[in-house]
Amino acid sequence: MPYGDGIERVNCFSLTDFHDFECCPFRFFVKHHLGKKYEIEESSEAMALGILLDLAIKKFHTSKAYGQPPTYLANLVMAAFNEIGDKVAKNPGASFYSGILPFLTDELVAKATEIFQSYYSAFDFKIKQSFGEVGFCEWIIQTEDLPAGRQGGRQFKLWGGPDCFELGEDGIPEIVDYKSREDVEKGKDNMDMDLMPKMYTLLCCKKLLELGYKQARFVVRFWQDPLEDSFYEEFDLADVSSLEQIFRQKIDRIMNTIEIKFCDSSYCRGCKHADREKFLYELEKHGIRYLKGDVEGFVAVPNIV
Ligand code: SF4
Image (cartoon, rainbow, N blue to C red; front, side):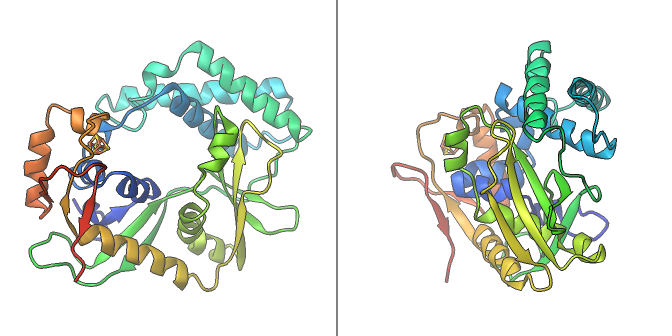
C-alpha cells in the first residue's frame, strides 16, 4: 500500500533490508516484498536487551535526565519496558516488539539497568546532550526503469533512523546509534561502518540542514564499552549525491534480481517456515523465480544486462 507520497511499501528500504539482501535474498524478498518480516524473523534475549537500552537512552534525552543520579536510570529502563508492553497490548499481532516480549523478564530489566548505569558512570554521569529528536526519517531516490513485467515504479524511499542526535564537544552534531553486544570485540569486528554511516547520514541530512548544520559526524556507541570512540565518520551535508548514488545502485541490484537459489541448509526460519512453498509462489507474482540446482551457499542472480 502506498503511503501519502504514493511510494509503494515494496519500494521502501531500511538499512536492515540492505543487510538482509546481502545475507539471503530469499529471506529478504519474503520479509520485504511479501511483508512477512515478523513471521520469519528470529528474536533473542540479546536483541531484547538492545531494544530496551535504545529506548531507555531515547527517554533519557527526551526527559532531559542530564545530571540525574544513576539510580534514576532504573525508571527509564522500566518506562521502556512498559512502553514495549503497551505497544504489544495495543497491537497484538506480529510486530517489531511482539517477538522480543518473551525475553523481557525482570532479570533482563535489571541487566539493562546495570549496563546503563555502568555506561553513565564511565562518563562521570555526563552524557552528551541531545539537540533534538531524530523521529522517523526518509529520503526519496529515483532509479532506472525496472525490467518489463516487474512491479514497482521508479521512485524509491530509504527510511528508518539512528537512535539519537547528540552534540559533540566541538559543536558538530552527532548522529548516534547505540549498540549492545555481549561479545563487544566480536561486535566491533562485525560492525558495518560502510553502509550504516552513509545511510543514517543521508536519512538525517535534511533535518540537520534545516537546523543550520553543514557537517555531521555519524557515531557508534557501545553500551558495553562506553569509552570506545573510534567508530565514527564525518560527512559534508551540503553534498550527499555520492551517498545517494550508492543506495541507488543497491536498489537497482535488488530490483533487477529475478532468480534466487537456496543455501539448502534450512537452518533458519526462512526455509523452515511451513509456508515456504507458498512464499515461492507469491514471489513469482513479483517476477522472482526459484532457480533449481544444487549450488552450495545461496546465490542471488541479478538480471544485469
Ligand atoms: S536456510 Fe539459507 S536460503 Fe533458506 S532462508 Fe535461511 S539463509 Fe536463506
